Image (cartoon, rainbow, N blue to C red):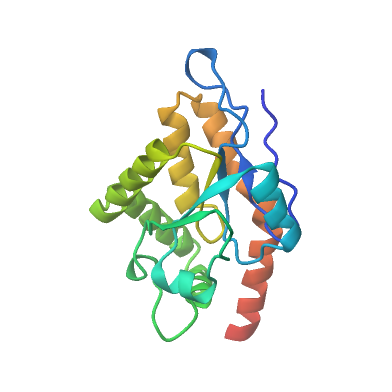
Length: 212
């Protein structure tokens, strides 16, 4: 069984190559073709060289909302086509125009966790329902598959902010379409806790301090 690891980059903590997963009919996903990630704002010059030269990155698909993109824009990478494909609207995930997108989302989660033991879980349940049931989200995931089908040379990378929820669902849909076993899909999804747990916990602690 393929070990699930992240690409060892300096400024990106959840960038992974799906190459090597066994798909339908005993075939395997080719390496250095399909990359999932969190946001690219922290990318270093060395990271850029790895993605551009070693992985031959050619397409960057951004799942984030307009305000998220405005606050932490993707770097312009030479030879890479940038494609905006937001999966949810700002309003759907509770982002307002007065504060930063990250602060809005974190504040909402902290407040919900403070209000009851199940409030944060209910918020995330609702978010996931939107990802698979809302017509807008379904259309955007459909467009993601159209982008994948039209891509030819080099690697294609898709990302949201943490590379967890929107990217997690999109990746699960893709792996399922390719015939990857459900057990592997779930295992790949859950690895986000190992790769980004410390980063998310740090953000939550900082926000809790601001809210006191």
